[in-house]
Length: 125
Figure 1: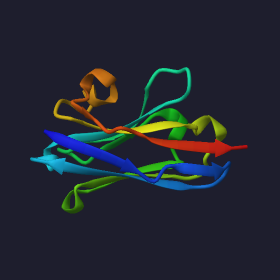
Figure 2: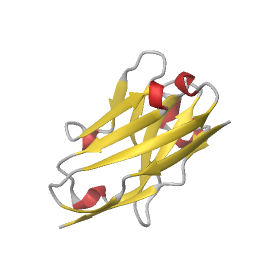
Figure 3: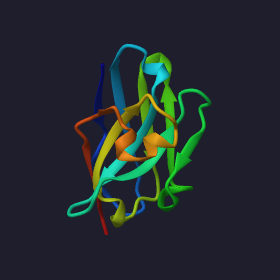
Figure 4: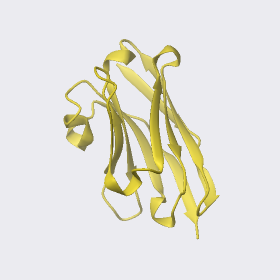
């Protein structure tokens, strides 16, 4: 069992930055691949970024490449999403996710074993 708690959301102007944190508790956290998803009002939850527990490789959806950075601190059981050059279209509830399957699987909602409750990011124009 893994529990995930996100923090760091808030209101920011376009062009600004935020850093989201996701604190994990439970056994064998380091053996889970981690991901961030987001869900904008009226839209489906979508993949943002993931990091493999095995290789440490990181993947991003095209719309955030070059702006977002996903990092992981196994010693603190915490992952981070540094978001720079934010745009109004980044406005969404951001969810932290953990999965025990492949790195490809965790890029889909069906591949997620555990979800956090989410943190709201609002980017004003």
